Length: 445
Ligand code: SF4
Ligand code: SF4
Image 1 (cartoon, helix red, strand yellow):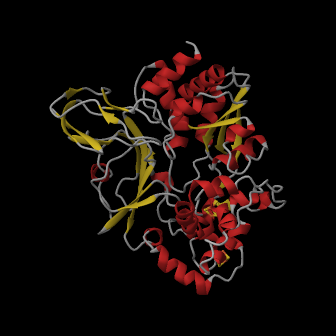
Image 2 (cartoon, protein in one colour):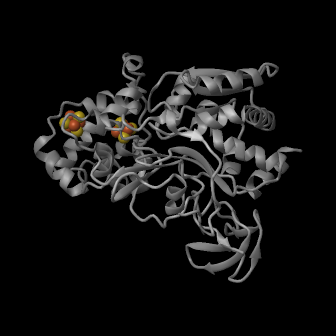
Image 3 (tube, rainbow, N blue to C red):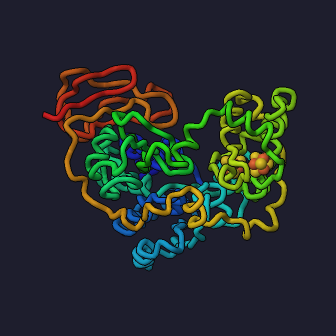
């Protein structure tokens, strides 16, 4: 199998980044990095998908890494996992014994260890320049589940039809499941024995970077990493539903410019020119327009949300950054990120934010992550609704119509020609019951 054939298999299987924005993996792998880094940090509190998969499927993960390293002509592959993931580390250590170009790097238990740029520095000691990708430092970073999907695509010609996710929080049976894509949140909640609180809300993803979801008919996608069920008045749910304008009104009078948000910002600590305290000050006085060059630094923010947890006034600089990115637009981004990096902060190693402290701060300590065992999904859904856009790029176009029969893995939507995107495949055998501009619904027969 040559590299073109390898990439064609990954592309045809619809593999996209399983833990972030859904970047099409074939595009990412069309590169020549020096090192391939497997991101097993999984730093969002309560989520367990990657550490469990690495333990359960260590052999396939190592085979997949070895294949990617060989196909991309890389010098080596590194499996980067937190030291506390002992089960995963033991399984991986056994599997890499005879693989001289693969190694393991253990990481500390701080947030956001899984941020790509933090990971590259921790593993290789290299700082990714402002606004650049890890490839600028010879690194390709790939998530555990994504790499296993590459394995399925290459060795089994199996497309992406399921998603591993941890459902936890206020549910009877917290667990990690392999769920058909397009399954509703309500169905997954039922599998977990329902919420243990009245009027629950769900955070899709982790508590730090996840989104608040109140519509339980919403489907699971290729990037859903977890569902955290919370009472609607839980501090995490309240913070995510806070009104930005109200937060800014409070900021104007209560931001004391202590700069704690900056002093613990992971990108600032890497030497990037990102100062959330200064952005907050500019915005409080409505000066981001005049000072757009300075405000352009918001494009260096990865929206990890740590600044909210370090802010003594409970403000949310990351939300302001998100908003300003939309307002300022890509031209300002291009102009700003030409700025050179400063040196890595000399106290950086002392300023990692410990996960146990983060869990306390988020009032999540009562939800024990150890309870989320890996389980088989108890019952298949009767129908699935697959979104046409579950990835970065253009939405896919349906290749089926209502009434068509499909089997597990049938191609049902393809990206437009020449566009960035990924195909979508049936996650259930049955017939297509509806097709609209955003989704395809399949009914089991
Ligand atoms: S979200 Fe806050 S802490 Fe995280 S990178 Fe952005 S400014 Fe820094
Ligand atoms: S930590 Fe909060 S109060 Fe302090 S400068 Fe940042 S936003 Fe303002």
